[in-house]
Amino acid sequence: MTLITRTRLFFMMCLLSPLAGAHPHSFIDLDSSMVIQNQNLVGVRMVWEMDELTSAELLLDAATAKDSPTVWQSMADELMENTRNQLYFSYMKSDGKPVQFAEKADNYSLLRHGNKAVFTFVLPIASPIPLKNSTITLSTYEQSFYVDMRYPSEKSIHLPDDIAEICSVKLTSPEPDASLMAYARSLDKNDSPGEDMMLGSKFAQIVTLKCH
Image 1 (cartoon, rainbow, N blue to C red):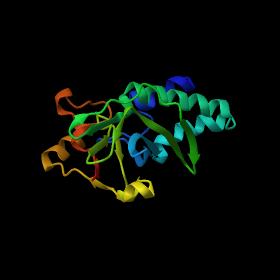
Image 2: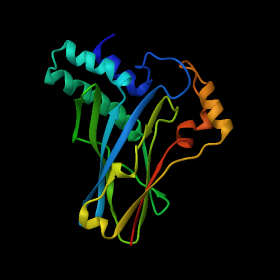
Image 3: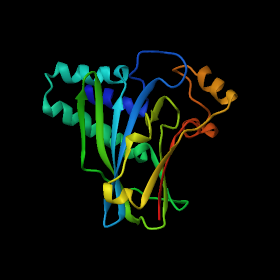
């Protein structure tokens, strides 16, 4: 399997981890910084730190190529393409209305942090969102729940100091019921949840940015 194919599979099929068993199979820690210009939200700088098993094959490819910058860039390009094709795995609303993301993110990179791969990019918003008297929500998840994407804590969400005076951030974690948890645990690596289940969204955290 080629490097390009293998990297594509990470986000298209989420099968890099060699472990079988219940969903999820891969884990990504999220970290987000709100990008503000003139008291408008123009984007979100996202940092995705993959777990060691998910990172292993990417890091092996990089090591085999002696950490060639060209190889790292090629992997970053593939991840960015697939992330963009999946609408950045992110869903934003402003005062209850869906927010459209811009078509292309140029500011992205893939790096090594110990035994983990870290993917960084700016989630671009098509039209700036005025912060005054607004409530903005953001969720990031992979719908099949092969990949569990979550913030370790509220401290993983950042606001510029001047904006923190007029805006507050709240992180809400879901509380799925026992039957849904049992269903997720019952799925093995070759199973996919029914399309009507929208499994990932049921386990997704919600970031709420509220401004006055």
